Length: 416
Image (cartoon, rainbow, N blue to C red):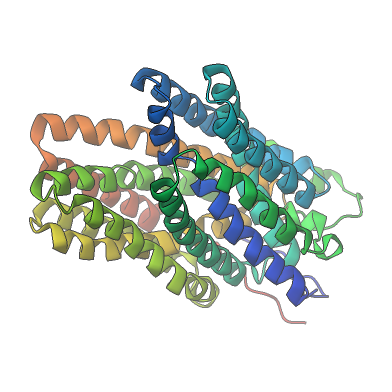
């Protein structure tokens, strides 16, 4: 496809803004870790039934799925991504406090809804701030740094909150989450608002407001929705998540049946290994994406997922299964960078970068939601090995789609 020229002047963000974004992502990962599995544990101690817990978790998941595209559109419409992100963090902090202080059904349901809505704008807001700070030609390495600090935040928060839950109470996890929102907001404040190019953050080319009819066509939502690479990529991501989301839960069940005593330790190791690989390799992925292009790394991620599924199907030793999680680290490191990077490529010049993120996010949610149901059914009827082979087959289909139809989206900066 024809590529627009690079801007004549390249603004380099300050070290303070870069570091502010690093620590904002780190602490935000800490805050988000306070939800998820800890909710089920805490509500169980409050004498909630499994039906009530399932309802709260499901409503949060449904709103999180349906809110992806509206969340992206909200960020595109905003004039300050920092303000949107700050309000979302404050909302999540208040939701955590509500869980801790008033664990009654109406309050917890409202808190789950608010948390889901806030999360729908946080992902696009982080990507928008990143793009607005460094620009489209340096976004790959920046996204790699984002993934590294998110991974470090997830790991440290899991350890901290697990210790608090064990030594104090499951309720303490939500107080910790609330207090972690404070350094998150302080880190966000370190990002200098004047260094964020608002138009660039939305994937637009300029901020002057002067648009021709051709410009208006190029920046319309319908034009974005007709972008073939975006639709192909969204379809590929859906297949990826359809294959990927159920693998770890399914494998956890297999490990528990084969080695019940060591299952918690082994499952924890299966989570830590990929996080460590993401933290170590994500910045390199961002640099290689600019040097090699997007397609080779995207194909590598799908191929690693295929291999992981096949190995899960044949490996019997639960300790070796932990080593197989190295392939999960590879896919996580690549996809955490490639998803917003390829969306930024495709949406460049449209002014709807964050809406495009919402489209791919919706595909991600649909694939992940269907994955556990599909894999669970196949495992119950035909056994776990067949289920893993089936998931590997879906990953192979995704690999074929990307190999056959997905074009290279990397833009090369033009020389003057």
